[in-house]
Image (cartoon, rainbow, N blue to C red; front, side, top):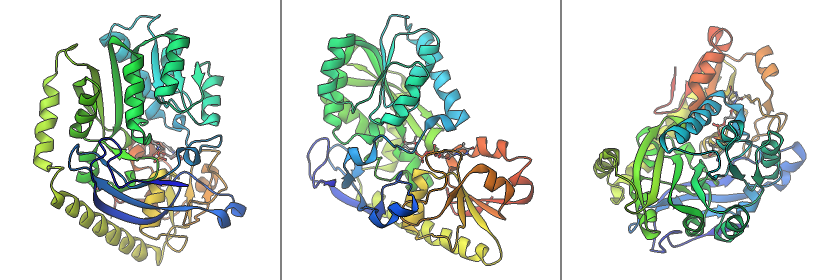
Length: 408
Ligand code: DWN
């Protein structure tokens, strides 16, 4: 089941279609052989709202088909992301004078998230995630968990059980929830008067500048800009008092949000409004240009792989959601990429969605080093290069598709 819309999911205005990537499987539905015949597809097409700027998907599979008891992605697989969340927990304690009894809620904390680090330091916290297996993993680390979808209804129950929150965080989560109005109603309901909501998600400016179209897949129903986030906040009497550009997820923005008038607005906010004026997210030509760049990226990438695969074995590093978009949009199968390697047990010995490239564990990769390796997890390239310094990098060559297809 999918949900299609002809109107903006936030403000209900008529939308304008942007890039269409065609038929797409569920990005994180890595398949056992016997599951291939029942695989489901939807149309991965994007649009923008000329009223509120929100860049979004036209069609999205039901959230229950994306987030469930067998969710494939465990955030813990990246050391970099662990460091990122540990540092964020310290920042919240230091910069916002967080006290041990203050409640911090993380929406979509996966297998631990930032609240895991607050828990380690003895702080009051609550993690919420709809996928049971990752929630169980967080619970096994001692994190207080509610295994559910966050929305306004759930916020009422949370308020009754735990009271209001001083800080609410969502990292790579807000972009995943189609009923954004219900999320903001829930946050409005749960946040203390002087509380803050922090959200970090892939940033539309990076998506367009890097042509990193692989950030577009079923889970990412929205890709935010400062402009669209600001319009959402205004409706709920919130304002963005600071922003921080991050390298995570291939280029993200962290938005610091409070009730209007509660905090001094940082000059960073205007800096990014100025930057976004130059891009003009309300001009149709911006989206036509992005569409052309996606097509060019696809052609260049396929040409490069076809040339290299004549005499070489090419593998892919990281069975990511992002590479589901790339491989299906570019129609890349085992003729070009022989296998994918990944360290996550929920993905190993399965097949990639749509193009059915086999996924092998790291030992297989180590024992069968390819000639070339595509960085499916290009957002983790620093961590991967460090790990492979004395291994794959000695004999093989890396391939990337961002910002353009090339051998590194
Ligand atoms: O928003 C989302 C982001 C944050 O995470 C979700 N919608 C789903 C997921 O997206 P993704 O699958 O594109 O995420 P990553 O973090 O790029 O996935 C990295 C993959 O690579 C994981 O499966 C783990 C794997 N990996 C590996 O095999 N060896 C990663 C590293 C760093 C490694 O050394």
